[in-house]
Image (cartoon, rainbow, N blue to C red; front, top):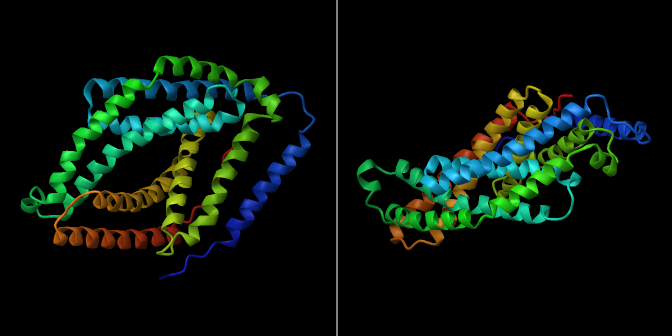
Length: 316
């Protein structure tokens, strides 16, 4: 297996950014006023925060009404984006109810994931089988039978989601993103806070990139996938708030997330297989297919890291 070096330039870049952040914090620790552009950034922050919440509520209504698969997928993405913006501004929010909201939205994401895993497994195994044989396999038939149950779970969870109460809570949270909350946290500006958050989210990626290429390091790849996904959502949010062009880094993060996501799908499919009764020969074929897929994806990940290493970036 080709080795994946960790560039010295990357190490130096990370250290320089940390040094700049520490210097800025020391220089402005006694300042009593926010930076000049903070009012605009605060206004955009509140706007993005609330817009992501409203998008989640809109898609919730659509899914309850139509149960359309695309809407279900979009709702799951919307729930992840809202969780990302909630985490971003979490330190500025009052303690009451924010932990409850975070827990409920996370549960929503998880419930939606069950149907997504079944549908992805159907697509995967159908693509790996001949058109004539795919519909007749015990695996395909069982996966199809699992779908109605997952749809009922989704409907039940969405209807139980207390959107009116949470809407009141979110509106208060949006109002909490203000100058006083920044002062209370001891920050000079949201720009400094965003920069600090970016470097904190990049550091686990930096540590995991090399070890994640080892075949046995499935847990590290899972952790790396989550870290990359969080950094990507961070940049999506920040690009709207700061009006910066993060097209390049978002595209690269998407490449990484795609490969790591497919590897995670293989793991989820393996877990599904463990819950399904199959003829021995069909189970063996499915396991061999998943093993070959995982090997191919790991090779793609190694090549991506060698060709396009993820280095730290943040535009101010």
